[in-house]
Length: 335
Image 1 (spheres, one colour):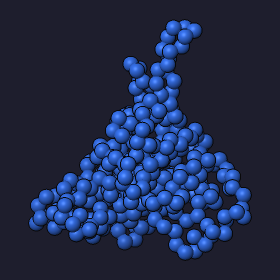
Image 2 (tube, one colour; image 1 turned 180 degrees about the horizontal axis):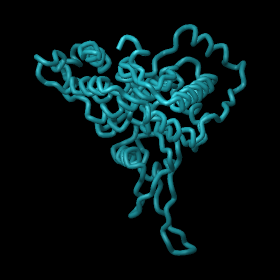
Image 3 (cartoon, helix red, strand yellow; image 1 turned 60 degrees about the horizontal axis):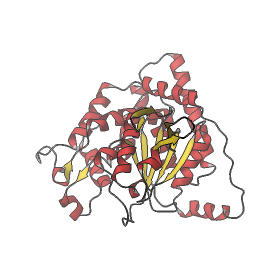
Image 4 (cartoon, one colour; image 1 turned 45 degrees about the horizontal axis):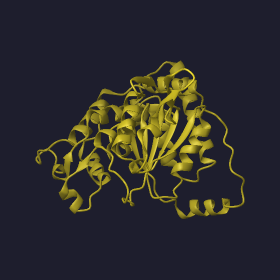
């Protein structure tokens, strides 16, 4: 598959036109968000990819790297409701999902819905909340519903959680359960800007007015982009490549996988599904109506890094999940 054009399946002209328009719209959204966010292109693309894939995104990085600004900027470009929730150790489930209140005029208990009843939720420092709050978050993220009292309420559609966490400060934090981590379609590592980008940030301070972003992406557009992404064809050999890549993270036989001693638990089948979806969306980002192996390789780290549990041996040798993913990508033959 060295030549993309040779692998491009023949598509009706109408589908090619849809792909072209989708690519142009996505490029416009990315440009608009980047008017407010200097650099961090991978973060912006990852957030948009999570939205189109119908999943949630976890952003990990030290403070001051524009994680919150990036989420707010994406929400401004979307035609959707937005709420920011600051997670703290004393947060209660009722602060998140709401509670039942007594209405004296009627003598009834009625629900007072919490801030999670919106389209885009910024869960700031999500790992600072205790287990009960994480349990309420898990139901919302997975089922798109919450339970208040004896009643269950559907959340607005689309429902999209963008959560942030600080990787270096662990005091007053709670480790997220593996089941909740698996509900995040992507885990994005937000790195420091380069010198040129930081200079651009410096020159904006106290000079420019806050950037007013245009609303570009409407709810109907999100649904349309999702339908187009679903129709992007994937060659059978690439499907097999995705499965081999995920299965290789679970192999415990050192004769088959020489990295097995560094992995306690491999990725679940949900990883295969998300690799499949995200590779299609990445193809749309590139303006292509078909998937190539490079799409799978590009989305593998954010899809897999929070689904592979490293062994004590890996931690003692200071390996990270990204190190293991790079080794797996180099070991699994590309079609």
